[in-house]
Image (cartoon, rainbow, N blue to C red; front, side, top):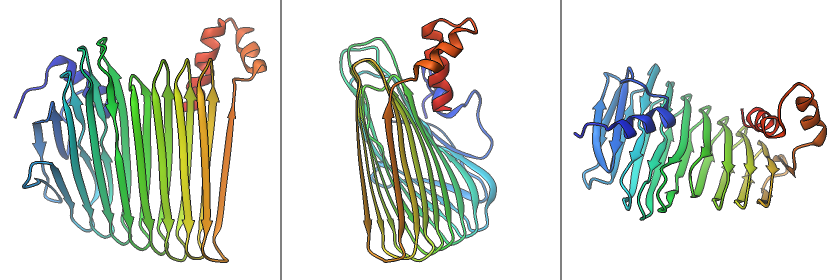
Length: 308
């Protein structure tokens, strides 16, 4: 195992809110090397035989436990692909904290592509938190391309909080989910781009059986010359419900493209999509500026509240 540098510790704090070793199970990865691991009686973490990632096994009935699996990169030019598989047993109630931070002070691109696959058994509840962050003053890009696959059995619940607020030059986030009878998926995505950054966020959610329910909400801000694309395709195959929402603020010369797609394969499938793109309202700015804020400070307050 390697010892974390001060820069890597800062990245850990940014992406996983870790200022010390957490309780419970964890697996820390730094510059493609293992930097720490702990298992518990109910949660086991095993390296894949081919070295491409880890398997996390959570025993049925496990409650009030957590798993932290952050990744940090502080080496310019490093590129990696990691596959992590989560097997969550029946009637669990657990929190999983992931995330990746890249500090690139060199001239070569650094990239992390993480593929996370979740197999959520009947009646299990999972809260998944994933944050992406970039820093460093080098000319090399900070690239993150996460793939999340979720396979949900009957009456399971998956809550996903995904945030990317600063420093990532290019990202292509793809989320695939399949829900069986009575399963519920809740997604809250927060995204901000600036400079020349590009971000793609794609969702493919299939409601397979009766009573499946999905609620996918994305809020984003595009500043400077950055570009964003939100692409959601929801398919209802039974008597099910889905609500998908894309709400965006566009600033400066930013570009935002929202591509909603709903496909009903059953007469009782209830699918709803809402999309709104607009600028910051002038009356909001004026109200805050009358309280003593500058225009820039007022903008920041509005954006922070929007992305909260």
